Image (cartoon, rainbow, N blue to C red):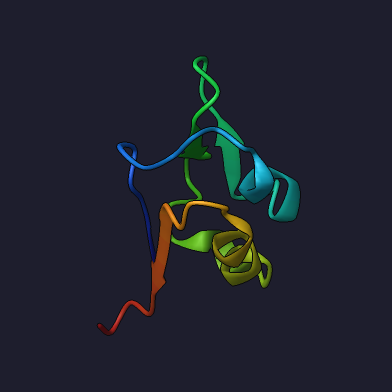
Length: 66
């Protein structure tokens, strides 16, 4: 799985961190970021739900194969 966060679009709503706290967090400025070592989603079933929860669609999730 590949997770991309568009930092130019993110508004820091935090919905991703609420939906999948084992993968997403917020940086010092309040914007979404991935936890170290969780860049591949770490098998968390809530990653796609977290992407859908983003109010500005700043998160893209793709399968590793394409």
